[in-house]
Structures are given as C-alpha cells and as structure tokens.
Length: 191
Ligand code: 5GP
Image (cartoon, rainbow, N blue to C red; front, side):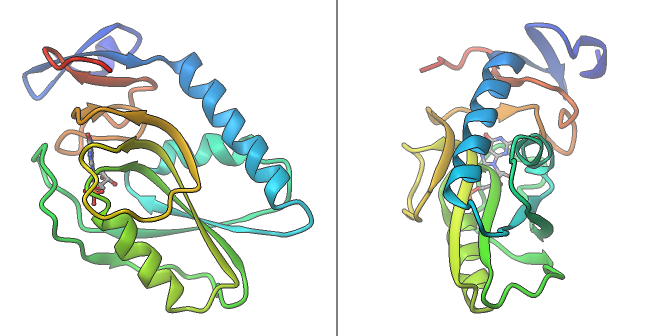
C-alpha cells in the first residue's frame, strides 16, 4: 500500500510499517500561523533571511513564509541525512551551501525537527562564520528528551516525545514527505 493512497487517512503505511496520525493539518496550520505572526512582529522594519534546511523543512518553510507579513528572503542549505534509518547517526555534513550573502543580515534558520540537536548546532556554528548581525532558529518539532546538544531554539512549533515521525516534509527513507499531516509509528505512545 502506498502512502499517497492514504494521504487523507488517520493510518498510513510506509515501507511496510504502519503509522498513525499525530498532528493533523489544522493543528499544524494554526501553529505555523502563530509562528509566522511572531516572526512578523519580532522583525518589523527588518528584512530577515530565512534559511531552510533541506530536505525536510521545505513544507514547513513554505507555509511559514506565507504567514509572514513582512519582507523577507529565502535560501537553503542541505545536510547529510539519516538515510533510511529511524535513528540519528550523529554525523552531520554540509552537502549544499547557502548562496545568499548573509554578512550583516538577520538570519532565521528553519528546521523540520530538532532531535539530538547536533544538526542545529552545526548549522548555527556554520552560519555564524559568515558574520550575520543576528541568528535565530525555528523548528516545527522539538524532541526535547532526545536533545543532547542544547542550541538556542527561538521559534518552536511543537515539543514532542522521542517518537519517530513522518509527513509534512519529514521522510522515512525519502518517502512520506508529501503527506500533509504528521504521523508516528503505530504502537508508539503520543505525549
Ligand atoms: P539531529 O541532528 O537533531 O539529531 O537531527 C535532525 C535531523 O534528523 C532532522 O532535520 C531530520 O532530518 C532528522 N530527524 C530527526 N528525527 C526525525 C524523525 O522523527 N523523523 C524523521 N523523518 N526525521 C527525523
């Protein structure tokens, strides 16, 4: 059974495993709109550069941008991924660098999820080398119990338990990113 056939369902199957609905589209949309409103207020009179971390953040970033009512720019960087595993490898590499000149700019790094925190720390350190005037971070999801490296998280959509999640940009072996809601492995307990 493919994920796309069941995209509007409470249960989806991906790579032979069963996932069930965790955050529905309305819950996600409301929270993303709140984050967009906060960013609009916090950066009024400035033009921040939002840097999306590929691949997982593209859907969150697209919705977040549409709810931001001030001028802003967008760029992307890409890190090495987990592959088809559900567990963080702890090894982070940069695969695509940003194109924007961010020296003296207000930067907001946009992640899909912070798990161990290693990726976010790597990105903040990497971006800071280019001398932006400020760096803040936004993440849709934060697995606070799994976080080993505490980086500053300024805009957090949802604090979630240490569960493997898919959908809304988040993949399982590159599949399931197109689901418009967020699902957890069946059998794992929601918070
Ligand atoms: P960290 O470096 O914080 O351990 O991991 C961050 C990255 O791991 C995220 O950008 C995401 O790509 C991936 N990741 C962490 N947890 C999950 C999860 O539950 N589901 C999916 N699909 N990816 C995850």
